Length: 447
Image (cartoon, rainbow, N blue to C red; front, top):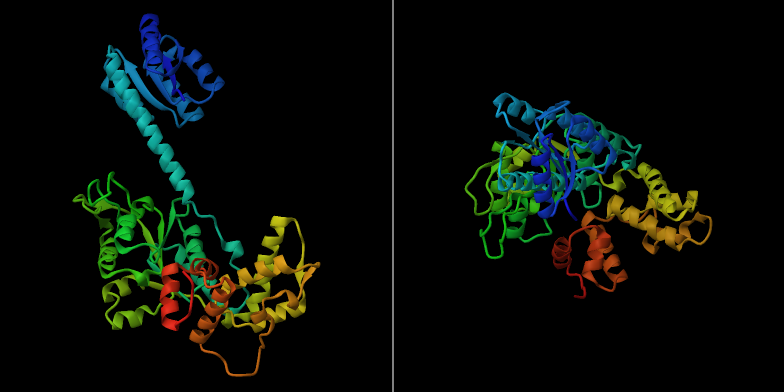
């Protein structure tokens, strides 16, 4: 596509020459000779990519046109021209949003360079806006549901800590909703209009995670053909959520500690200090205190991350929240298909009887499966998975958490014929974490 250029100058000869040259260089040029004509062009056509404005026009000045552009088309970059070389007017134009300022007469080459730089700036601003929008975090509060005292304590703590800039660590088993807590903290903070960047610390090899978090310079290692900005830079002004922070290597723990303490880091292969203002919310399902005692986690980082700690209780410890959560998930699923079904009281009681080793994430998958399998207008116990359908609320020996996790992983792996990739997706964990659990429990899988 040709870039759209608005050229406003009251010198007919100069305007005609510039217009022809710019068109020859591939621009789609619209010209005007006055403030009034420029305003008509701005209001009557699709937005311009760049505008070249003479500062002194017969019926006013280019600053008036600049203000109109800022109001009607703020993404348009502006280059000002003047034959008077007034430094005061140059400063005023820049204050009002002009990208550059050239004195007449200027060569075509000078103007072309200024326009190209303005277009590069416009493209960068657009890319940043797209990136920021991609990391914009909606408020997930309406889906954070529960009435139990344990849940209400968590929710109240989120509301209190969100207003601060303190580092927060969210603790809890897999599937309890640690990322939801992080999103709520961000959405209720004064950083909510900036990016929330989510990083799963288990999904990448250490060197790649290093580069993802902190960026790298061109030539920093084989394959680094361009400079790459890190996720801490993307999150500048906002929040970065480090999920499964307990899996960080000692080298990354050291670098994370420095960012927390100084707000500074360097690209891989770089020497320049980069300053960022980022709030860190970390999460893990591992016992960081035990890891610290055994020498696997830095004590100084442990205490830095633990400024504020939020413990999210497992679903089995707040069974009174299960009916509301199940109905919420079902309503969301049914809305996609234009249906309206509800759980029978017996089905809800049966959901409360199950121990939920996979927590809220497992409940969501169970509701999805029941919604697919149910044939009538309601979802009854017969539509629930066998392990949930056969659960009893009382009697028998209570299982340990490890036994529940092993049994659930076994059931999922059996359901997908041992496919580890599918099992990890259903369980809501990374394949790396699943591999570790499979090895610990001696489970059989396929490749």
